[in-house]
Structure formats: C-alpha cells, structure tokens
Amino acid sequence: MKNYFLTLLLFTISFSFGQKKECLYDFEEKTDSTYIKKTADILVHERVFGNNKEMIFFSLLNSNGAPMLGLQQIQKSKDFIPALCFDKNSKVIFQLENGKIITLINSSQENCSSFSYDEESKSNIKIITNYFLFLKDNYDELKKSPISLMRIKYVGESKDIVFKSNMNSELLKSNSSPSNYFVDYLNCVE
Image (tube, rainbow, N blue to C red; front, side, top):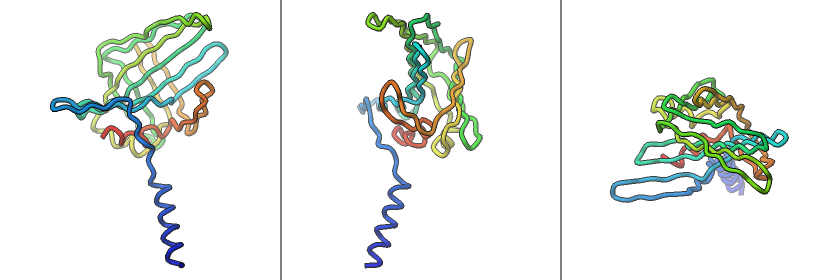
C-alpha cells in the first residue's frame, strides 16, 4: 500500500510539472511537396483605455520546416488610427526573463495595416498581420525562458510591450499566459 501511494505521488508530481499546453491548429496540410501547419491565435497583449482598444495575437507557422511567428495587431478607436507598416528592416525583439535578447526578422518585403469602419460602434479599425522568422542561434532559448519584454519595430517607429505571466482579457473574457507563449507552444511547430 505504501508503494502504491509513493508511485501515485511521483506520477502526479511528474505529470503536473511536465505538462505542455495542447497544440491546437487552425490549418495543417501535408502533400508530396509541401508541409504547412499553423497554430491557433493566442492573445498575448490587450490594452483598453477609454474608447481605444488594442489586441496582439501570436500564432506559430511551420512552412516546409521553417518555423515562423505570426503577429496580428488589431486596433479599434473612435479617433483616427495612423497606419502601421512593416518593411524588410522590421523586427520583433524579445527580452527573456533570463536576460537573453532574441530577434526575429521580417519574412516579407512590405506590409501595412488595413482599415475598416464599424458602423454600429462608429469606430475605426486597423489590422496588421505579419510573419517573422526565427534565427537558429536563438531558437532554443525561447523554449527555456519566459518573455519579459517585446519590442516591435515598424517602419519609422517602435512599440515596447511588457509581457504578463497571467492575463485576464477584458475584451475576450479569456485567460492566457503571454510570458510563457514560446515555452508552452513552440513545440507545436517542430
């Protein structure tokens, strides 16, 4: 009986510490010449201030063995929202909790936010989606340490975002762990 409880205790401890997040995919296709899979979008940043709302989502994409970070930024406001653009020099830079700096480079030439108008709420909406490539020399660090800070370098400006270990979304009514995004999900595209 004593061995049974010891075995049960060890199993419970190893299961709770070794558990990874479930990989949910929006898209997965494998043919003779291509292999593509994309994870579901996860909210990593939300800012609500008066009539201004901003959300940033991450997803991961594996295209023929090349992992990429998908970044989608959505802004909604009754005021004018300036366009955001990415070009070949744009980057996403992460500072990890272990002090390491990780840079992801833009995978495309130029991409600017699209505009729409929500007649019901009388709000402007800007959406930009882009993909960034991981570099081999820093890829493994992302699996080991949580994110503390992110800098997005657009054309002509940059934005710094402090990552939270736990975030309760006011807009989506959901809970996520933004700082552990790569620790939890990078294995989904390997």
